[in-house]
Length: 150
Image (cartoon, rainbow, N blue to C red; front, side):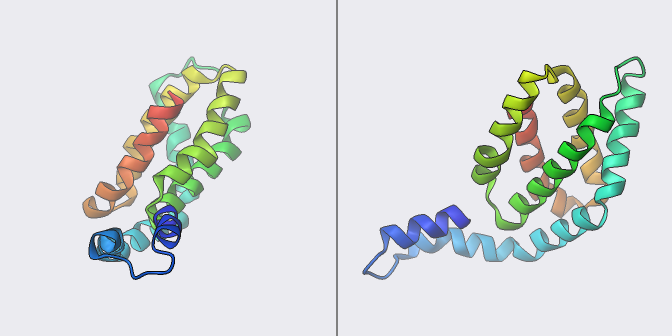
């Protein structure tokens, strides 16, 4: 949404915006209450979400080398960025500012296999903290993690 606001500011400079140009704002306002609720739940349960991912990864692959201590900070940041992307309806900013940078780091340290476990488990954990309506908006953002990082 922030990028769309910025683009509209440039495109409509010196004139009134057309109805079709404002559609994104109407769509956002219709979902803002759900977005805010989901954001708040993710924020307030971040520690539990991170712990649930750790436990899920351990159950899924008990023999996997535990990078959790190293990656916990990155996962906390990623969940925070995803929550912000959900709140502001701005997946493009998440992709370009966080995920592409994190993809570079992951490849440099050869964490692709760890990413598979982490982000698939995260996709299963997030709905446990949200209503179905909130999860419907949140899951595409967390799926973007899988698309970029796995």
